[in-house]
Image (cartoon, rainbow, N blue to C red; front, side):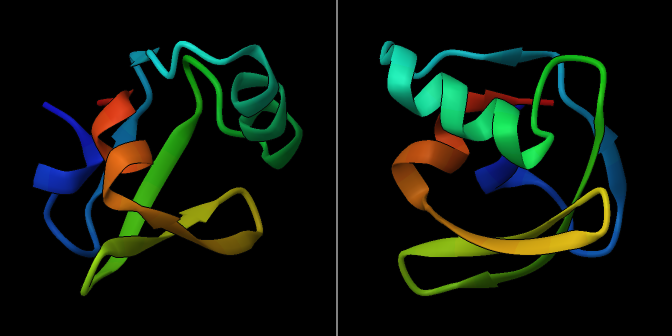
Length: 70
């Protein structure tokens, strides 16, 4: 299952990140999004979703949401 399919408001644990791009992986790591960390989908919006990671909220597009497995 990936973030695009996640229920809003439910906390999940990141199990894998498969972007295929080291820069994107490094960016996600800098946000605190890496394997073993909790992540919550705050809401689904057109073209992506808003997620809560640690103490921050970020908007990610559908392609990235599909690359983050939970």
